[in-house]
Amino acid sequence: MPAGHGLRSRTRDLFARPFRKKGPTPLSIYLRTYKIGDYVDVKVNGSIHKGMPHKFYHGRTGRVWNVTKRAIGVEVNKQVGNRIIRKRIHVRVEHVQPSRCHEDFLQRIKTNDKLKGEAKARGEVISTKRQPKGPKPGFMVEGATLETVTPIPYDVVNDLKGGY
Amino acid sequence: MAFVKAQKSRAYFKRFQVKYKRRREGKTDYRARIRMINQDKNKYNTPKYRFVVRFSNQDIVAQIVSASIAGDMVLAAAYAHELPHYGVEVGLTNYAAAYCTGLLLARRVLKTLEMDEEYEGNVEATGEDFSVEPAESRRPFRALLDVGLVRTTTGNRVFGALKGALDGGLDIPHSDKRFAGYNKESKQLDPEVHRKYIYGGHVAAYMRTLEEDEPEKYQSHFSEYIMRGVDADGLEEMYKKVHAAIRADPTPKKSEKQPPKEHKRYNLKKLTYEERKAKLIERLNALNAAAGDDEEEDDD
Image 1 (cartoon, rainbow over the protein chains, first blue to last red):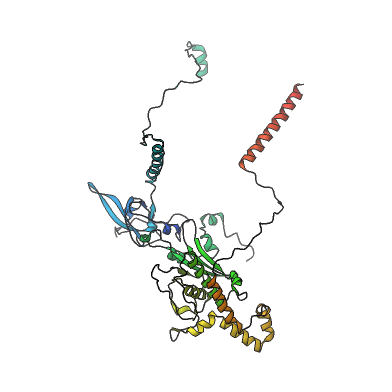
Image 2 (image 1 turned 90 degrees about the vertical axis):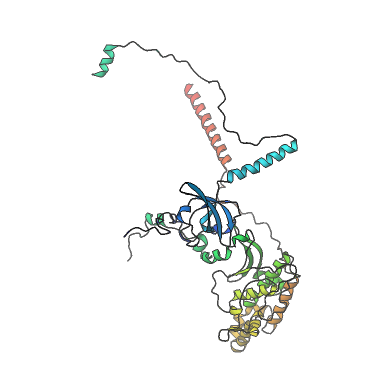
């Protein structure tokens, strides 16, 4: 009898709970709030059977486009043939965690706003643009000693002795 | 079977998954907790308040709690051991005391939120099913009853506390099915019986029967009541006064606490990282100095 391609086919290990983390889920999952426009990672919690996304979306990151009573609407990119479609799925909050992909950007916004504010108070104009790493500056080599290496004449007798 | 090979090997412990700490202590039902705490996502950060009632052997705890990732935040709390301030000193864990504690908590919360003028609740406890009516300016304070691990039978004291909170003016969704005095056959709450329980009528009845039939047992069982001069007929009056006192001033009284006594330290205090490093440097210096002296002696 052939294998079958049902909704949860080939998910025996993918949807399994990790070692020694089976049973009740921690409550903090239910206490997090999500706003539209947040980035979230989709990671299936196999012990919660409702509101599970399809296995394709496990490990994808998308943006929140809708918030309902118990679930979040996430917009995820999916390549279909020769194009990428923005797919909109609804997923229960247990299968979603806040993504840190955006964290660095949000931190930068905060620090840049602060720096700009301080600069404005001082009356200067600063650039908060990120610069790529440039070439290393020139330097003098310290503690270098000169050692002259010269070849020694080939001594047939001594060298052959080692060989036999 | 006295000498059996050790059942729990190292492999057993390596694979053993402990239950959550509060489940191991048998204090929290996580299945129920998830369902109580779960707030609709489209209500974002709106707190969901629980009216928590817990009984110990000598005390009643009533709290309004909201959950957060850092831990549950208690908005207000009332304990049965505060009731002596309001005039009841004995029977601090009975149905009537539970009613008083619930009432105290409700009035306290409404006072801190400055809603106590609007929502008087049921001033005269009649035992009937009472639900708060929404006033014009603000909607009533809503909380959900959290009984914990208690078996919810008809006439349980948690529902006494619930009744106290309802009469105090909180909006707690409930039905009258589990109040004391609900008749299973006729499917109706008998307000008279409930009122009796709220004013300790069941305790008074027991006191009267014991006084008549078994005076020695009465002396031993209700010794605290007798010592304070509380008798069966005065019980209802006492509780009426307590309800009035609670409504008059529900704010908690701060008690003066002395700073804790300094005890002699029997073990050594742990050193900080800096202290340990400093000690090491001292020891090394001493060693070097001693070694230096020895070398000088040897050289000489």
